[in-house]
Image (cartoon, rainbow, N blue to C red):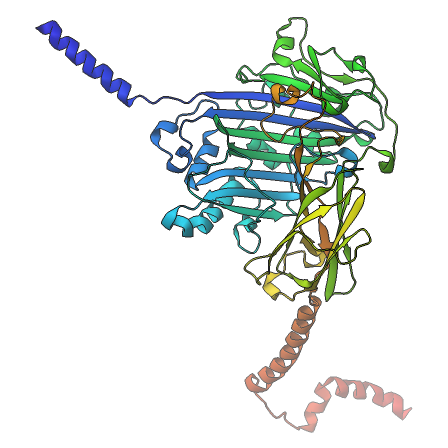
Length: 587
């Protein structure tokens, strides 16, 4: 009887423990560094740190139940941020410099100048009115988490919702709650080491081991182009978080024109310890992406890679598994060296991408101005459908009736589709989206005019004479499958060896979705003479001082009549002088 009761108690206890235990979802972490020579002395560094978390029910992002609050590798702060503000997907980029797609090719993940944040927020049922409040609080939380001054994105005067240009990059959530897109850009956002520090603290091995050892903030920020990126989205396995850092270093400045270069020579660091937590699909790898021609053969890159793959479009991928290489006792660190010279080649002679876009300003004066966006389809035989997104701040009132599309010699070309939203002062910017088909070997010219608005005196920034930034134009399209894209050409999803080598034996590569950004423009906005208030203040203060001083003397001082006694005349200064000069006059 005693044993039976003991068995019952133990069974009840075990059932209680099993029912109340918290099962931690399966998590993976992998890291990669992609190296490439962009030509003309530019070296490409692409750091990618990928976290994956298997989740059976994606709605945990919205519900945030207790069974999903235990994490091993996946940063909990990111998950809590998404759950708190009902964000199913978001992308944050902080970039310094301009990615020259005409000379360097298309980026694996495009980034505009300054700061860009776009997110998909849930708007279910009666809570749809909370989207704006969730967006404001989400922007404030992101600003504090990554030490970025992007609080201005929370206002409706900066944020907008494109209709076609931005689509979800993660797994489609059909049948679930509807989502709302918010996009905001700040062109003049500064990027420094303060943004890299909290970003690197999300890494499992921080900067102590693995690829993170190469994150030398001084060297990476002292480059022609650098970008800090955070990409959070759902996948077929659950959730994926990619922390990326992209840098383009000009060796003409970093190495004073020296031809041979290595990772250590440009970053002053090398990988000496593997990250033991990088146990994902790719582990810890260093990849070199290069062309088979006219680049030199594989022996020009040292040391010899463990594996190499021939990809589409004449690309070759050299794979360095850092975990295996560092297990060799004879190697204290891993450093990749490039022992081939480079020669300066004009941009016109480089193998250009199929679609190139640029933006410039027209017009003079402080009252009106204009913008021209030129898009060229350089493909010899295939037409390309492009989506053009133009966001104009409310301080520049866009004149929709001045919109002109010039396609080759056709001066009155019409777009396939047009989506336009007029700006409202201090409420929202103007938004223009165009869907246009550009024939092969043809250039498209989109132009419009705008008027410069007069703003209130307290709405001017501290550097009012600097001007007003016009955000870059966003051009989206699907690159032709037979086009020869320039390096680097990497998928925008989670990086892996399998994705890069899946079609290495295919004769025609798959089409790639490309989103590129043009240059941002600096517009000279109208402003008053800020020295006039100072001049008026000085003049008014002077007049008041003179007038009030005179009135003060008259009202406060007592008037008295002096004694006209002739005997007292000698006591004055003039009396004493006359007395001294009297003997001289008599002589």
